[in-house]
Image 1 (cartoon, rainbow, N blue to C red):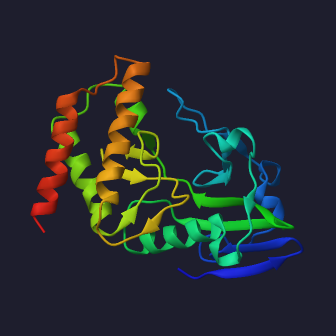
Image 2: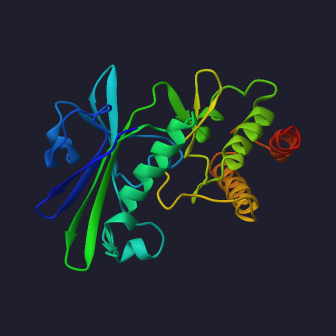
Length: 243
């Protein structure tokens, strides 16, 4: 990973020349690409409408504009308090993704990130390499029943991230993505961090469990029941014991 930071009139752009050779402000708008399409999904898996696929096959990217969620998002859509360049959300996430990708973890390779500052506030965007042939866990379990052993392998894969100290601030059935081989990828590390082992591991598992229960409430036909969660935990803790 090689990073370059270019200053702009109202902020800065961070990028990796080995991933995206040329970058400019227009690349952070869908109109700056020949092809752009919104990310869509079922069961509320398309996020907040702030994410686009851009570029052409075979090398496509994902462009995401940072927007707030929860109660504060109803009042402040996409601005954040300025506390310095190094702590801006896109730069922190870009560098975390780069570290994880360099370790071989299944996460998107970061391409570029930028912030635009206006007084005490800033807005932000990030561009990552699109992972081919993945669907959210929510969509994966909406299709055919997963193969025998899927939930155990998923639990083991999540432990693999935790073993590397990967804290995902919003680990849910949408940010966990499954490829054609049934392997796990993780997306969207806004507010994520690399931490020492601790109670955060249990909290992220509980967040994922709540997410799965929530989407099953939306569609009871989904292939997830309590015994599947027990299989997940079996895989997670078996992986932790095999170190």
